[in-house]
Amino acid sequence: MDFGTECLQGIEKRRISKTGWYITVLTMKHDSAEFSIKLAETSIEMQAAQKLRYRVFVKELGGVVDPDYAKDGLECDAFDAHVDHLILQDKTLPETDNVIGVYRLLRGDVASKGIGFYSASEFHLDKIIQSDRKSLELGRSCVDKRYRGGAAMHLLWSALADYVAAHKIEILFGVASFHGTNPNDIAHALSFLHHNYLAPDDLCVSAYGNDAISIDLLAIEDINRPKASTQLPALIKSYLRLGGTIGKGAFVDHAFNTIDVCLVMDTAQMSEKYKALYERDSAA
Image 1: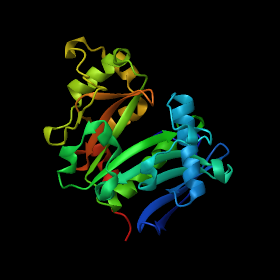
Image 2: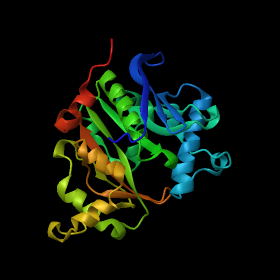
Image 3: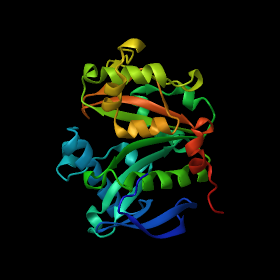
Image 4: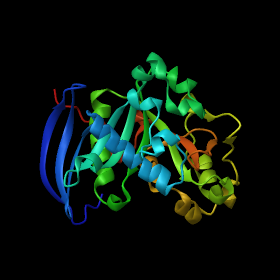
């Protein structure tokens, strides 16, 4: 990760009392910004995260949300009350608007108590659920457009690594999205994923329902790899570099104006380059 002009100001290991796990808390300078990262613990922090999600998923990407929430500029759903929200804050901004990066984290042991997984509305997750391995669903990942291309995503992933280690997570998964709903516009990228990154059979989830589509759109010899690379969102590329794979098919989410694939990552099979990041022990 190229930190550019960012300057590391301080690092400390802090215990999050709500969950008992340790997270690396960083204070960093980026231009006029001062970053810190934690789990959301207050209603103000939660609403700031939902405001960011609204700016990205609704204002930028054209998603549609419940009008009752839209009038307040919030993107939220029933899962929010059951998940952990990992938030990246710019402490130089007002408290009500200082969340500039977020990850929504739903552990399998929490989902099994009744809420289920968000991805289950688009993909058959039986192979993950029945694996008896500790799983974590990642969702609603986004960074304010003013902070993209710098340290923000690195900080979120570093804190996510602490969370994964503390909870001994074995399988990471979740939907990742392409903007737009026409698969022909991203046929090279979808076909590239199908032919090169299909999950192993024991973890290969599959899209279902009327909005499920095949992503085996082009023969492997017909794929233009530079075009496929251009069509792939940066976040999906990053997951692939970490050793990520995808399930069969995709789901057209008309409400959010996206085409979703399900990324699946077995932490035991992660790329050696990044393995240390996700296997480091949390402090005791």
